[in-house]
Image (cartoon, rainbow, N blue to C red):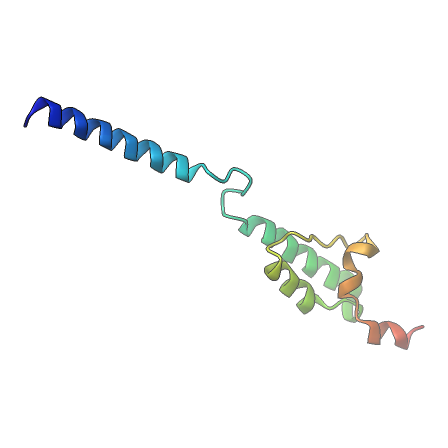
Length: 96
């Protein structure tokens, strides 16, 4: 093989490797699993709120919101503002 072709091939391979590494590291804000860990935390919090509030909390709607918004909203069972949209108003009215 011609030395100039060998050097061009080496440079091309190095460039491709560098480009691949840059693409792999291009999104440092996402966690290792591509956001699945955040969704898991959201789902876990929905389940915890469901256990705490029972029929007053709509866990299904909470879980669907976790998936739809990719975990960007994390329900906190002790913060009424973060779970207000998931409270079952029909059940609350029974006891009001």
